[in-house]
Image 1 (cartoon, helix red, strand yellow):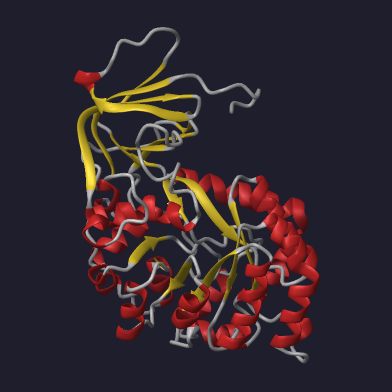
Image 2 (tube, rainbow, N blue to C red):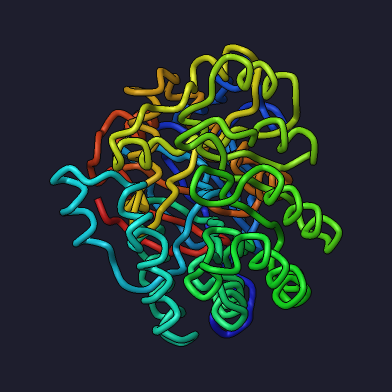
Length: 416
């Protein structure tokens, strides 16, 4: 809807050099289908009421009556609005000092153990208050749009208390994001003596009932120094009973049982997987759990890249995301993720596009209306400043995003 509450006007995007969209109608896409992208040359896209109503070659464009806003696409290519299915975008403060220390040789795990890392952002996020968090997320959301992201997920987990966790979820929801309850991100200082189990009891009894009304999914950091497999199971089972979808941060630094737990509980996704080896790859390939890969985080921390090629070749469901956060992946750019997917993860540009559109939308339960340029889908469209859509991954770190259409309205105009 427009600011006044009326439907957006009809929008015709015409003369596009290419329109690229994941093939077919199914989701998620895996195996050979992961790399299937339909491309229309010299095409048009017609949007009405915030939805796509027609897509095709210019030679097939019907006569249009009535008022139509036109957007000239000469020299541009179109892809679906990008879907970022794993972010921590609702935070205050920064960790630039930590970044400098890590550049000088300190490890992420050492900084976390010394009270930095996640707990550093917890202090800043608690201090910001709900209005401060709303301002911060609005800024981060604007950055995302400039990078072509039209749908985003964001997690709580930087409050680790009742008030701030719920405030994060409210802010994410009000900003149009998909909220995920990550109360089990770390053990806060006030529970350092009582321990992880006591903190989880607090989360389940005092925070989860209201969080379940605000969030769509729950997540847990299952890792050495955070929560172990039994603790993660206890939290996730309670969240599932409260009606939330399940997700896990797993195998980032160690294989600590995250993949078997994700399969046991029927999680929607397991995210990271930098340390996943052959048994975990085979288990994911035989399951419906999506492997969400976060190459920016691996790059930022100097960690091994996740085994994307092996996962894809085995038939696992893959998605890509930024992991945008202040400590281990300070970047909101899905185009950069696609570049890393092609240059470091050995995925093809077609596979990278599917992974951050249709498959990412599947993780968020929105694959029926997000992630494709097809009639009936939301009119979320990214125009790239190149005639070939593969510049999305090819132009490494460049200003490839030209125009962003969200819900049938221009959210970013001609920026490249």
